[in-house]
Image 1 (spheres, rainbow, N blue to C red):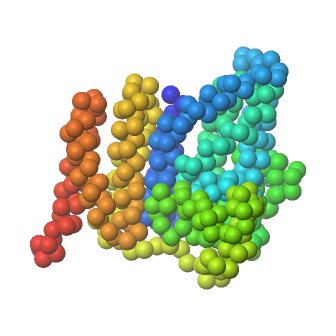
Image 2 (image 1 turned 45 degrees about the vertical axis):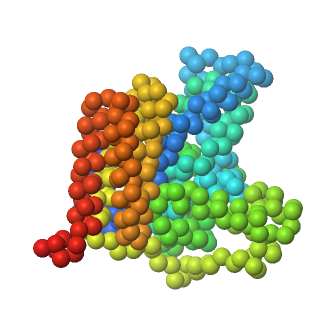
Image 3 (image 1 turned 180 degrees about the horizontal axis):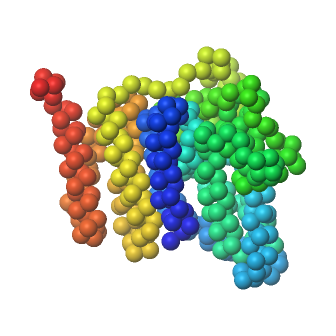
Length: 404
């Protein structure tokens, strides 16, 4: 089981504690719809990772030690050096993900939330699958791929706690060396003073060395989100919004050169002819408003229950993945991923038709593929399916009866 599988329960507990603290303080740093959107995106990312992770390991192991003999995994020097150098490689991966169109298309998901809290840390992309390329230098100089994977996991674990607004400033020596909540709040802000700053994962020193450091300013409150807002909580739209825009730009431009350049140019670049024929609406920061469509209370509770079940199911799947066949993994991935799309769409426009269809198909899968579930998992899935189905039937019932 991976390090992230062990730490995920702690992430969830800490997030719940922050929600309680936020509620007691009345700071309003959490919104249910935004939190559900972030968690749905994160859960989808984790289930996808179970499917594609093996491809990255295959590539990494093939490169390992091809230039220099492998370092000893027993040496503490190997681990310290690898952790520090990995963080430097992460800095460049993160920085290029803000500066190159196709890399930003994969990374933008993490920045789309217009709130900033611990649920934002769990908002991870599903299409940012080329990040392992930045680990190639470590593999070529002989750092064992197993060490690289562990260092990457701990790097990501560290980054969880810096996604909070409740910790203002830490002692000066910590702020000078480490990435802190104050530093990372700057990174997530879309203010002109803050944009594309503070890319470090664990150590802020890389930003200071390479000229991308920005202190959090008391006179400039952070505005979170991205310049082109997603305007949806759906993780499918979150992951493919920018990819779809770039594909359309590549199709619509008359320049064959620009059809290729659009993917590799600086973030936000578009072919000049497409800028004129297919302009994109821009939202000035002066009139920025958070995306917050209204939903009835039952729908919010329904979405909250769904995302809780999805998070627990993902943790179970991660812990037990080795005991499942490939067909079982794909089946479970589909059953877990589909409601993430349909329930978040409900929060967008109160349309429950897709969720109704999803429930019908899920019933079919539970009955037809029942032999692929162990007994306990099948009963858990059946119980949750009954609860969701009764809720949707109630919602679809004639209003005069539903209001009785």
